Image 1 (cartoon, rainbow, N blue to C red):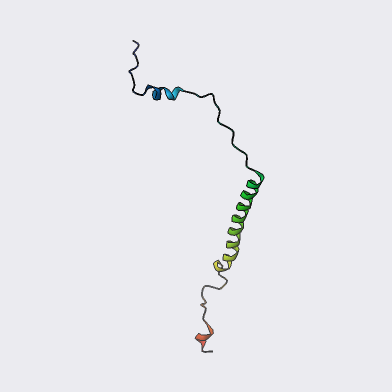
Image 2: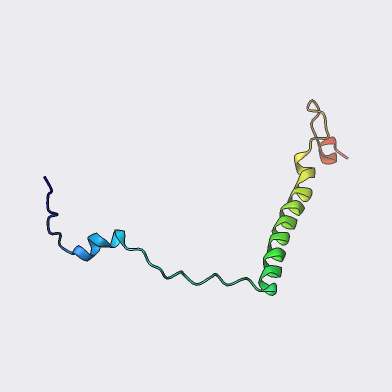
Length: 79
């Protein structure tokens, strides 16, 4: 009716899953004011760089000319 548990090599490892520690890990250190300011400054500079790249790149992406006309230089006209 009741079976005995077979001996397991490294029995301490087999019992480790039942072990619960009553020791809590130490609390995380809070970031200092300088670290927080540095993180904010880094994030702000990344956002500003992306916005600046978008503003600078917008004229190249816009098509102000009708699609039927082509550009030609004055040299092509013989001037």
